[in-house]
Image 1 (cartoon, helix red, strand yellow):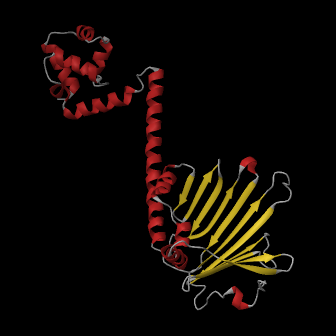
Image 2: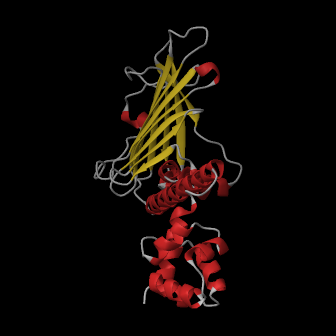
Image 3: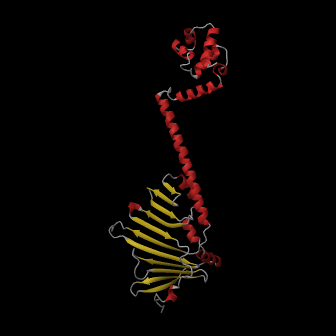
Length: 322
């Protein structure tokens, strides 16, 4: 027996007309008639009122299956019956909740990807790499005449060589040469004398303790300088994960960091998540300075090669002390 038949039977047993029953639950007689003809169904509040009038349970009145259908129907119609302002608040809250869930899912995905990159890059122990750094500085008073500084860094095994050129196109003799031999624990700096086109030689570093000296050359003989360029600490990884302006592409292994306040940065990684290139543009006060920095790592290119001692190579003439 379905709901319409039960309602008709219970109403007859109670001696109520359709109009009398309608008055008791504040609906029209036509509404009761439609219920009994199975043309519509009462909402939950009316089912409760009917169960009280006929002294029966809602389950007995409509059955469990019908009860669940009524609950769903009430939920579906809930927002439609709301006041317009209340309905708008409800929809806004639902929309914000969906956006928040999507944002948290993206942040979690980015954190997992950046953590994986960090762990793989930190396990990197290749001692050979090259780096090119170009610094372009604009003077406020001479904006049309920017100054350039190009720095080349090469590390093969335990030898490190850094050469600096005061131009974007590195030609002629470098102005500063830094050479480090971590095996011999020796280092020096050559500075170009522009008048004679020869070099002054200076001690590369001074140390207060043997331990400080040991740690310094150990650092340059390892891959730590490379790791420092290619890894992110936990604080940055969390910050990058939560920052909606940081985009991580898992297919090209590229992380792009976009910040409208400090400039733009682009980090590119190879298939092993090792950083292959960084391009950074930063502006100082009044946007008078622009920095473009790139790092290029080569894993196999230097096999069987070494860095030559600049002085012993005979390429650079040294000014002798009198």
